[in-house]
Length: 239
Image (cartoon, rainbow, N blue to C red):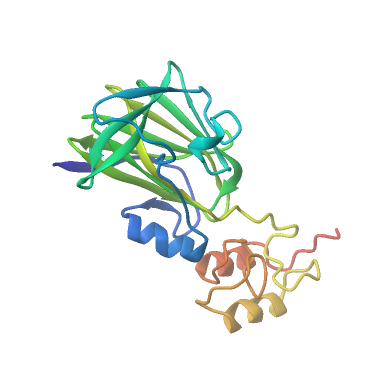
């Protein structure tokens, strides 16, 4: 197997936003909130395919498929569940022609998935109409594609391929928490020294999203929150 990721495009983004290189890195970001869709809710014989609804989600799929809520998969052509062989085990893989879109019900702080059995794949991550960046993979087996966007949130991903694009093991789990007053850590609608002190007091800690200095709503107090305070310094949401 040979996997070569190439960063194609990266929009202006806050510190620490951008590509996620491995599943382990993504799981660290998502911590215990990680959700996994592996498409293993029913059995497909190895080497055969089963038609899937297009678009596919927990509402359109048969109940026994047991899909998790939160993501809709859609293809420009057709979707199928293919019985493949991945990581040394039989594995269900979602195939969808040369173009496939993953749309999340709520903007996500970070997402990831595996691209399977294609030689040329591009995964482009979006926040609404804003393109966050693209990853290109030369794949002769499987490759992990992930992105972290703690401020804007990831709304959807477009996957293009030179073949029948395969997808497996989709990871997500932390919806972006909207912040009513950017940079306001203590909730008094003014960005000042109290907010800065709250960020510093809880520096490099995991908290409930939107609390204890987490101005970006990603559940971690770090440089993103410090930058958020400084960028909105001495402003008031009451003005």
